[in-house]
Length: 183
Image 1 (cartoon, rainbow, N blue to C red):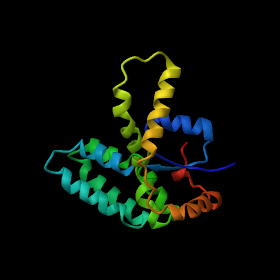
Image 2 (cartoon, one colour):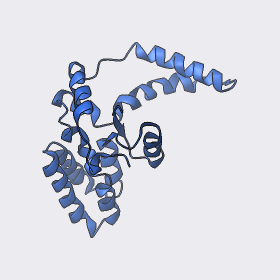
Image 3 (cartoon, one colour):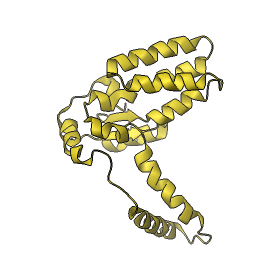
């Protein structure tokens, strides 16, 4: 069975859908930008920049070291800010899936966040928002398709697009461990 890399924000409904449609044995990369936002919103404003910097620095480390550093950060936050610590620990291993897969560095930046899909969606929101007379689901689908086709003209290739073949080869050959599975 073919394996995919899913980059997501951790929504339980999305995880369930991936598991149901594609099976349990898929790779999941948690969006790092969403994780940083989720942790920082649990903190006072004066502490947020420090924790954000620690998280960004940890993401640049080897996966084992990075996870250890973030666990250390969670322990430090635990007493005063248990919500932030819990948020940081939740899905911790999934924030390093792309690094553990040894994806080429040229691709890592665009594969560790959901920006690749959120950007086109943001691009079509304006033209879709101007439509005032929706005449059913089929019309909505046509407007969305039309907006995406118009937005496509401004798309650029992703960073590292020439290395996508390496990602595909890795997904075919790599074995999953329990920390990388959707289940």
